[in-house]
Length: 112
Image (cartoon, rainbow, N blue to C red; front, side):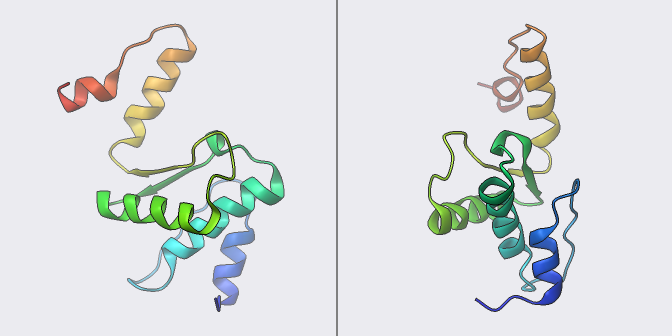
């Protein structure tokens, strides 16, 4: 796989959040997949501390499938690739659980 200098820089970025913006087909998904694996495998950052957000369900599903195809189960903790609208709900739900309130917001939002 041939990666550009900019892609390699983004993959190797480990100091704080990263925003990857580019035109369609430029390799954003590839960068996010390899950056996630780099953080987990080379920098001992737990998958529970990484959140990759995208703008479509199809893209989130594609990222998850491509990640598992390339890296398999590299951690006992699942890696998250999520639709941007789901992320605030997940963060709120996790916060509620941490303070002792087990309120299933995602099930409420889905109507189940």
